[in-house]
Amino acid sequence: MNINATLIGQTIMFALFVWFCMKFVWPPIMAALDARSKRIADGLAAAERGKNDLALASKRSAELLREAKEKVSEIIALGDKRASEIVEEAKVQAKIEGERIVTAAKAEVEQEVFRAKEHLRTQVTAVALAGAGKILGREIDAKAHNDLLDKLVAEI
Amino acid sequence: MGFWAFNMDTLLVSLLLGLVFLFLFNRVAKSVSTDVPSGMQNFVEWVVEFIDSSVRGSFNGRSALVAPLALTIFAWIFLMNLMDLVPIDYVSLITQPLGIGHFKLVPTTDPNATIGMAIGVFLLVLYYSVKVKGLGGFVGELTLQPFGKFGLPVNLFLEGVNLIAKPVSLALRLFGNMYAGEMIFILIALMGASWVSFTFSSTLLFGSQIILSLGWAIFHILIVTLQAFIFMTLTIVYLDMAHQEHH
Image (cartoon, rainbow over all chains, first blue to last red; front, side):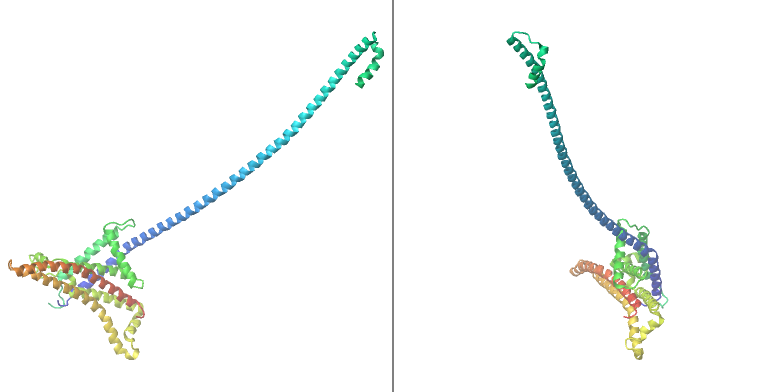
């Protein structure tokens, strides 16, 4: 149990071990630990970023959807308006057309009536002449009485 | 045996254990990866992180030396203390046929080993004291407080005792604990060694040895770790004090 030179040897050994540990053991392990903790921190940060991105994207998509809906309803409203306009226009057109047809028909009818009257007039003239001829018992000189007859026709 | 004798058992065992520690840790350090660690790397990282947090907790300065120093002290002393758990009679079973009379397997029960390490720590304390505070600052710290320059002899005595007490307490605490523990192992082993025949007292002693040595060994697992931890923590604290301007 006496104190002897062993302690010198022990001190030297101690110093060598510490030197070796400081040189070849501690730094690589510590570097690896630091690198790993940095990697984990990076991973966590990336996950956080991804989460934020997702939230942003879903917000943006909701916004887009809302905008699209708005646009669609706008378009539908526009279409409705346009359709009623077209219907209105068609109605006006139809009215005008109808009026035109009616006018034309009226004119035709008038013309027809006129023509019929004209025809009737000539017929009446012939009948009147024939009647008058029979009544008078003699042939009326058509030529001599044409003026008279014409006046009669105009009066009818 | 004069001063220039070497206790070869102490030196050999401590050298071997130091090499075991450095070999294991260096192998991990070489193949260390930042992927998911497994097996030995896991264990080594756990130890390194434990030491690192201890150093960060007690040491306020920045030094590349203190943490590896603490790791070396802890692991080396732990391994040396752990030899305490090897049944003492088995050692002589191997060494006796080799012609070695007395072989001390636990280096920390040799005061030379603990004093040797304490001297190493003490030299570091001196070195950092002078490096951080300058030679004048260090001498001033030793002589000018706590009573001012007129109480110089008293100051020197008080601070000198304070300074010397550091390595002495380091060395003797470890040595005392391990030596006492080993002594009790020897005493327990003597109970079974006093076997005569199948008498009541011999059987009782033998059974007591088994139970007591088991209990003491389990308790010693705690002491082995605790003493290594205390030596390491005190070293960190002493070096921290050496780095501080005022204490």
